[in-house]
Length: 386
Ligand SMILES: [Zn+2]
Ligand SMILES: [Zn+2]
Ligand SMILES: [Zn+2]
Image (cartoon, rainbow, N blue to C red; front, side, top):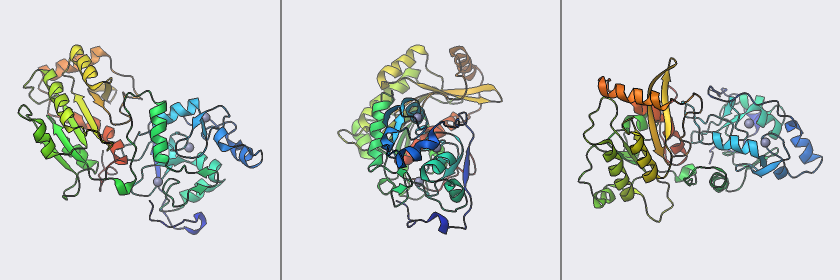
């Protein structure tokens, strides 16, 4: 997919170094014992690379790496699944596409790719010193974007997108099946139906909606009482259905569960039938639903919620509960989750005091980033603001 022709590492002296520091997460990769031996095992001992964990060098292979030829042990598989579809605020993935480590990563400069690679993977699997050369290049494109499929020991899998889907469906405990990610030439502008809450600002700042007519579109409805299937079919088709209970500062004109029932009803209308095209939905609760209502949502939408807290200065400012089939939406990985008491405290505050009409949807921005693997995106503000 890259426009760059076959690229000789030595022949590209002039570029800017682009690094992404992954602020979130994990402890640094331990000095992967035995990983340096991968090359020796493959080249000298003639061991099949599929029998070695590409991420740590272990011989206890549990499955195959979905993107590159090589094995994967069980702990590395778990780490990989956790990191899959996690993005930083700059729109790039947070972890190495090979071994899922964080820290300082080399990023792919193909504008349609969001992948990153750690120095160690590049040096061990492509060749010693490679990370330094990549680092010194401008316009480096990654091992999934290069026109040739092999770099040193790193051999891109044929049909890696199908492998990735199969890997996710088989290994993850998520109740939702993953849609196969799309190569850039198949990505279309996203078509969104937003109920009760507008997410235009968020999707625009992520680059999914622009001003041009070909840059995605969003239809926003506050009242759906009279909307019938025919309406949705006429307005559609849609790729994303969003719905939410009223945000703080907005009037709640209905019993909280009403928002769920209407969302669920329109979901039936908007969901493509008998088609494999990627279709996503997200239902968000701004702490309006009581425990009983929440259980109802879990039953209707057939999954558990994720709680996304907004903690600033060590203080819990707000939180949202999210149900969605967008990959990688899950409860906060970094901070302790707020307790039910804290959440109901927030919920009471939001009712008694007239909170300013903030946009808690800001919390959701990163939840939409995995959609970059499915839909066209345009210029974004990601690098300048968050
Ligand atoms: Zn491993
Ligand atoms: Zn790595
Ligand atoms: Zn790339």
